[in-house]
Length: 508
Image 1: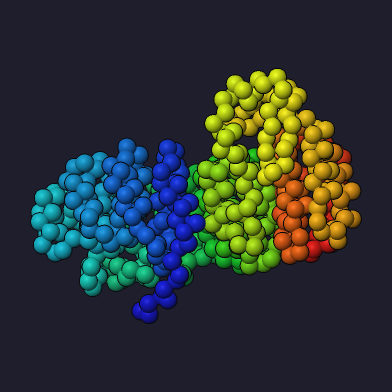
Image 2: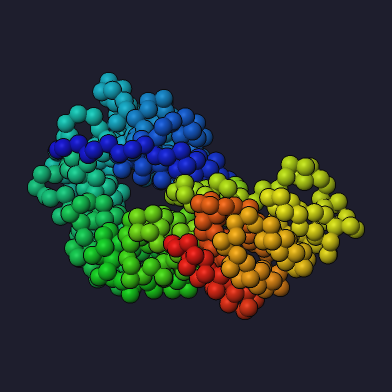
């Protein structure tokens, strides 16, 4: 089999997102980070530095969370780093209590240990021969695969053996470990879609998705018979989005499942979002962009960033780009969604310059003085001073505030626009001022308003080609604000006019 061409290493931004996930206190984020690292390695990419992965594995291999340990075992196998071999052996000899996890530990161990060490371990395991542990060991085993005939008794009595058969068949084109030469890679697993064990059904659909010859058209059950369980739906959606032909054949069904009120499981919606990551689907571009804006689940929004990034970068979709830029501007600097957007952004988006950063001296100021000073604090937004002399209350978490005086937003805007050096864009000034006046009366978070002030000020200070870039950012910020709850009707109307005018002025 010809080797796949080596792809460029994962970017530093992508590695940073994974690192943030692995350091998270949320087990679901950790699991997703491990999955993403495995996906990158299985896709033929490398990391420029593996230190952060190995450091995190030391803790995650002994995590109290079953699925974190499971994906950690798989990542160890893909890294091919034997520094974790002792922990794998301990897991197989008793520290790992989950049966499926022991299978993944067996798979990883067999891919790393030499024959002497493997033989010594097998002699100490009374439940190895003829069980799922032996099947699992075939996945990453060194050397020529042993194509032993399948003991059908193990297949019949042990659901976990059937799950591992699905896994082996799904990976067969990359790791030719088919265990029985009497059957094709997918013959047995396709029948498993009618298994009495729900997880075997899930793995059967996974194998159909993973194998290059698999297709939703080969399912031996109708899709509407597979909707009872979220984990099964997750992979059904992945199979239905395996390619554009599959997705277009099920377009109305998939569009319906983008709505959290129709698909209540975030696990299943995440599967759909991941399936869309490499598809354009121009027929549903509006629906998928709207889905990102309205999706309540962080994990699903993270998955959708790749889809919008594809639209923006490869298909030059300005709206998808603007939505991502606006979402990035609204993110906290430590927000996972912001880091994910940065990982798909191109340099010309200018995201490195769009963070709202409080000056160091204001971080050092006491919160009592900030929120109770009778004269009112001043926030510096990229050199523009906003007088906050009206009543200020703290809302939400962190440093978000409410109560910015509307007149001061307008005054700051007018002052910045009057001082702009480039006179060629003077015709946009009335539209910007009108939007900012309406924005000041809108009942939205003050951080959103401050981001708009900053974008206006950046635009006013720029000239030449940078002016065009800053106008694009302003357009992105305004467009991203139009759907925010609490926006005044005249702000929405004025914002739409401003976006259209900027687009006419600079294009894109």
